[in-house]
Every structure is written in structure tokens, then in C-alpha cells.
Image (cartoon, rainbow, N blue to C red; front, side, top):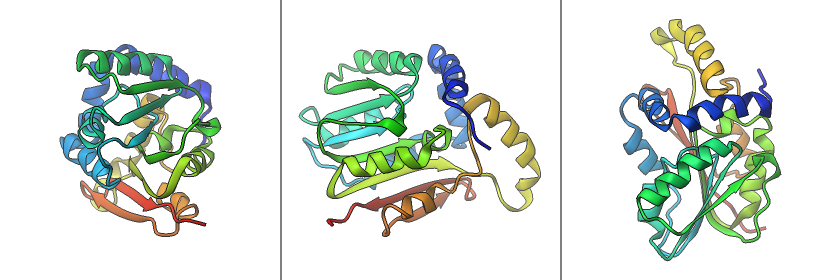
Length: 216
């Protein structure tokens, strides 16, 4: 199951124009645990005040408040997304909160190229929607300084009894989020960072995969 960049562009064009709808969709996806899980994802990075962090597939900027708390006003957030509409919504969120330490970049994550090494990288519900997700992961890891961390927050289909709803869930998220549930993102990250760990939440429908880039 693979989706094109054009498919993702059309999908997130809608969400970017209606950020409140996107927020509601995230609340449903995380079963009301959104803030807790986003905060946990950021904590896995062990960021310090003044650090520079990449928010890959940043969407409407729902991670910003947690990243701002972690890096402070002297730090920097690099907000990267393919959708201009999502970036516009993210810029508006930054403006409303007077966050002036965020650089916004539009582009294909599989072609990510930064002019500086970073102290952390994360992505929430983004890698699973990127067509060339393995390339995007590699680019993000390559951009990390040695001994710094990457953290991925994403979803998988339910197991057990609730799996009877999987066809419906897969259909809805395919059309409304370009979600490719066939990707094994924790394992793909482990191919790049051997010390990758995975923690699962919400009946194992949500996970955080994280690891530290080792020196050569």
C-alpha cells in the first residue's frame, strides 16, 4: 500500500485549511491522550535549552508547545512539511503564541537537506504518510549530531478483539490521512539506529520509537 506525494498533498491541503478539524482528528486518533503522548515523544529526545530540533512533517504545529518548553527561546525549531497549507496553519499557531524561534521549510522529507546539524528530530503521525519514508528517516538521522536522539510517534492497527474494525479504520485513514499501516516504522528506524526502543500505548495502537545516533 503506497501513496504518492500528490495524494498526500491533496489530503493535507484540506487539513491545513481546517486546522480545528485536524486537531479533533488527532484527539480521536490518540483516544484523548494526545498531549500526554506528544509530551512523552519530546521527552525521549532529552533536549536542553538552546538546542536545535527538527519537527519532520510538522503539520499544523501541534508539537510546538512541547518543543518550546524543551529548547526555550534561545533554541530553534525547524518545522518541515510538504503541505503549504499545513505550514500556513503552523505559522499562524507560532504567531499567536509569539514563538519567533521557528524556521519553516516546505519540501519532500525524502529529499531533506539542512545546513546545520541538529540536536534532536521527531515526527508525529507523519512518517507513516510519507511515500518514501525510509529515505526520510535516513535523512533525519543523517542530520543528527552524534549521540543525539530521534523520536517517532505513530499508530498501528488494533490487535485482538478490536481488530474486527481494522478494515474500516484502514479505509478511513487511507483516505483522510494517507496512512500506510503496512509500514513497520520501528524496525525501519532500527535498521538505522540499532539501539532503537519502542514503547506502546492505548492498547498498543500508538507507539513511540526512539533511539540515539552513535558515533561512527
